[in-house]
Amino acid sequence: MKKCLIFLFLLLPLIACSKKHEEKVLATIDGEKITLQEFNAELDKIPMNMKMLVAGQSGKKNFLDRLIVQKLLLKEAKKENLEKDKDFQDKLAEFKNQLIMQTLLSKKIAKESNFSDEELQKYYDAHKEEFKKEREIQTRQIVVKSEQEAKELEGKIAKGEDFADLAKRYSLDPSAKTNGGDIGYHPKGTLIPEYEEAAFKLTKTGQVSAPVKTQLGYHIIKLEGMKPPTYVPFNEVKDFIRQKLTQEKQTEMVQKYIEDLKKNTKIVVNADLLKEEGKQAETPAKTEGAKPEGATAPPPAGTATPEATAKPEAKEQGSAPAKTGPETTK
Image (tube, rainbow, N blue to C red; front, side, top):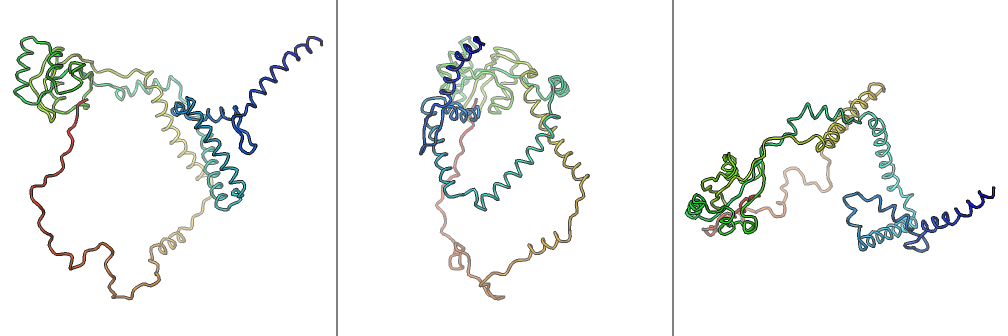
């Protein structure tokens, strides 16, 4: 018994400290508290991709200000007794119904739409072509304004001058000054068509193309490397497969569940009444101040009158359509 009392006395300070920590007050609004515990609980509700916005001191101060504003608005709403407002009650009932239906469907499908790793692997093996990566090539380029310049550079390369060095000195691409014209690996469909067509015809590392004309100029392309066709590893697409199969399964289950509910319920629809309502909606309603039959209404504002339909003066010749910006390489 004595040992129990000693243990209790040792425990009391810890309980007191814990309680004191939980009741740390960050702000008060007319006596209403926002505690540190409440503040942290609200922070935890923020989506992960938004967490960085409140990571720093200024972000936390802004978030606290938002909580204070919420408290102020809720206080004012209570003063005006808005919870008993009919419009509010109608919207609340609508939201409640939506939430109830969503909760019902979630409970019905959650347990039956889980997939094991074995099932995901089975899908991956059966649909492996969906996860195939086509051949990629790494190229280096020199781009100049004229074909003559390109041919001169082609001759220098043929004589053994370094391609990257020539790119740094002559290429119009600003990044070539630092990377020697290297544009990295790229699959088909990511670069200017003329460039891409010539680049994918290169078959050996180190091979150089003849000058290729694009809207950016004349390119000389060197093949630096190749990656053969491959498949994205299962571990990299496992979560994607799980999400895909889950969505498909849940859609299928919801449809079946609703069909079963309809089959097991006596539903009577008065189709004739629905048709009558449709006919009434199609009949144009008479408006006040309608003009008698045959009367001519004035033209709407902005409509040209006969006097205003004379031929306009000829436009000044020589104007050209606006130019569109050229495509850019990667």
